[in-house]
Image (cartoon, rainbow, N blue to C red; front, side, top):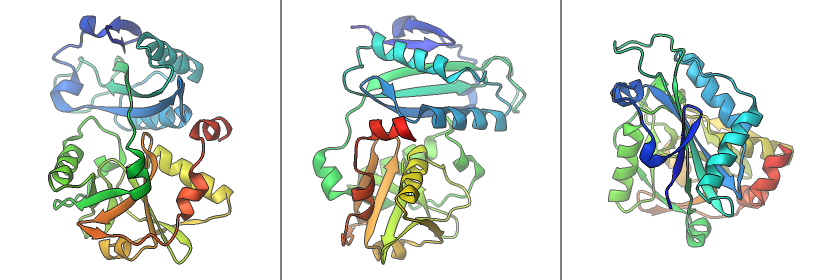
Length: 284
């Protein structure tokens, strides 16, 4: 069965999809993206994803049309249906580039961005991973850049970090700031619990996650305050619990850091947020 993809408001078979080799996304990685979890045809937290990509586009002079959210729902539903992905889990990616009008290496204002929406099936980590946790490996190259605040198509740093971790027998890379403090995972945000209090590492530049936002909101609704704290790896190793979040994996514990097995003195976060995220999406 042929797959379908949206290219600039037109749903076409992937074999017929065409993007110019002069597109800025190809030439410079000049664009942004969002990855959205879809449960049985329903995209989760779509409003938050759209707000983030629209804000990011504005920050880089890309004029993304702010379509009504109903239009985005319709497009996503169409691409999900066209690919027969409505009965299970899927990942939808929205990509926006500056387009083809500006070959010079600057960030000129773009009125005609390239917009792509595609969908694929999603296989979450195994139940063993959700129960036991992910193995974290510290990426040796530290990072301190404002680009970390955005989900940019210029993604090589994070791909290299993830590849490093997998090559060392891990599941996810741990990213450090220039001063050695903890920032985030290569594809995840970090929460930890110490003495009954929930923290997340302070980082001047990191991607503020959609699922991170929902977890904070949900915990605060449950009366649990989330505090920011300057955190070193030693602080994570001494934590009572360590959890990772992103839009696809949702909430998953960490098992070890650089081969050192972490304490599991409880499941505070897991117990509070482990429920039907589709139901949460309808009420938040």
